[in-house]
Image 1 (cartoon, rainbow, N blue to C red):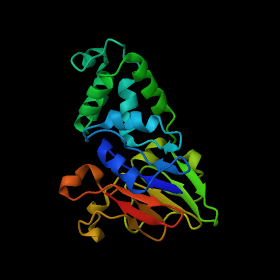
Image 2: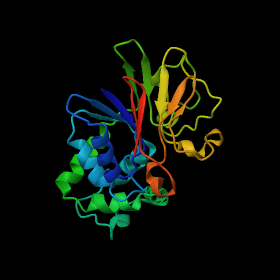
Image 3: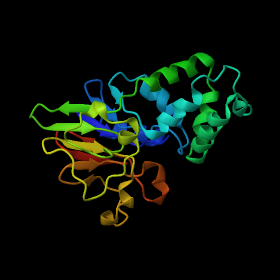
Image 4: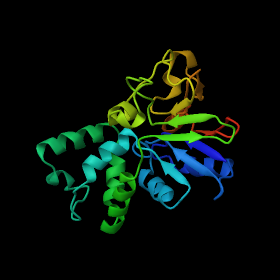
Length: 237
């Protein structure tokens, strides 16, 4: 079976609950469409868990992109107390933007790792892909990105879009994408779409599917969603 999740945002317990619910096994594949980290309580344990699973395929989200900017080049001596000492003025501005976007707990947990494990986490993040293209046995085709595609043009190959177009897009209900394949993404919680009337459910349109149901906002009604591509069944926790 092939599954898709997105925007876990440090919700390791919810992720584990979902894995149990779908009975995820070594025979299955799971694509996670970015934003593993930030905001939730356990972003680094979640990353470490996924690192150990060879059948999880991670895509880059905007939160991982800024994290990499902030941790690349940090010395082993960096701690939560002194980390800002190691940034240039420009680097500190990026770091500050990350902190304002929920990065504090991720950085604190990351800097709590031993230097070797920090390097392994960075190497793992550097392997995240910007998009995936899948063809199911029945011929159905899917394109996976973190956020949709900003400035979509069917004549532009996926590899030619800038990174921001695939990790910071905000598709609207009326947007249309590919005619011959379905785009799947997260990034924008579906409960923020006017037509959803505050419901945290996967949003299906003619050409795209948004699977970000606001897992990190669980206490406010958000959910973690998982879409099984084999039969298009949706699971929630």
